[in-house]
Image (cartoon, rainbow, N blue to C red; front, side, top):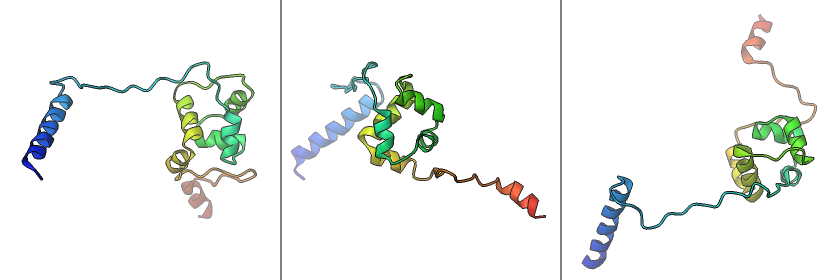
Length: 124
């Protein structure tokens, strides 16, 4: 590496360190625009793209089935973290699948398994 390039790189590293320590302001900052509160979210379309029922989708994103139903029928508008999660599910479905890959969504008619401790007590 040429000495001039090395000196420029070293200076950039020192400058980055001083910005991280808040000794110097950053020359540029980037802030994404917040989603418009009036922008509609097609919850039914997002759910359908994942091939899930309302109850399965609700369980996956951590809300009640009634909430998903109200969103889909435009009775309520998702807000806060739910809005962000729905936006991710819409724009980057692979991220939602990766983030929730450890979760098991019950299929219609499937029964919940009893807790392990209760099952052990029944067998005694």
